[in-house]
Length: 375
Ligand SMILES: [Mg+2]
Image (cartoon, rainbow, N blue to C red; front, side, top):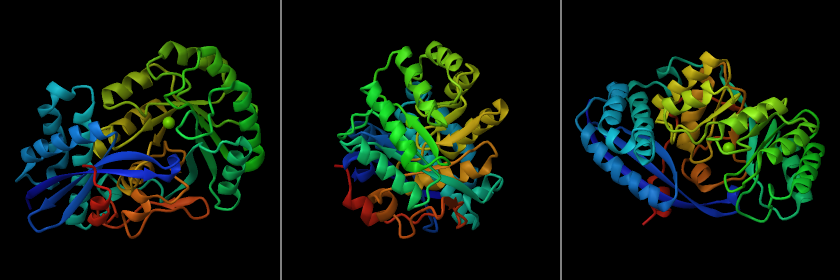
């Protein structure tokens, strides 16, 4: 069976979990001679990166026309080889490779009648505990805390991860005392057992002392991990944080290649490695990250905050390794999860099952891609 068509699809959609702001993605469909189609996604976020990625998907797609989708890892290597001039350590070239790679795994699975989890060697576990992964956007911290409490009490999420410094009115991450008050209220709202994770948004600039002070204060309320409290490149900052805090430290989601992840892991500053298959070379690239994580006895955490396609890929990856603690899901219904596919992923009683339908287990509705098409 040969590949006969590779097509990029750019979308711009309102994300209710990000106070309705527009976010962009680049999808990729790969069609085999018999019409079977695989779907992939890159988390391109902005119009300019989406357009650049779509061009690269088109050009790289030409390079794999006529190839056998069973040779997907060989094709991944060829695309990396081809893009060394403009994507040696990442960037939009890696977005394109990510989208193509995920689509190839989906296509391969559909052609073989096997779920991706089987193609990558099988499930270490069949289901994963789910936390609500949010961007704080309510003006009132009391209301924001209470909203998260409802996610845990009423919807049974096993915990929450709150992004600070996000667009919207919450303005978390700017005033230390207010942040500490919020985390105290949050713990009261979600109860003593729920997991509590705080994530500094990249728009926030904290001094090392502020990062340590916040983390120490959050720890008094049972912080599970602090995520990227300083810039990922500030290794010295992370090392000083390590000496001052007891909780786990998360970073990695901004890395593109196994080489970059290896550098972060070898620096000894990370306990929970964030990795987005829609950026880090797809499923093939993320499997290399999992190898590194397993070797270092730390934790893999999928940064799956985009469409159902990356959620499906992330679920398979996360379920494949014992070094995964939980799975993050956006708690508010949204276009790229709930409109995109007739059978969206959801959690039940705080658990999500690993997809078992052939390929990724997601049927993408092309009409939804047309509806949100980025011009
Ligand atoms: Mg994060």
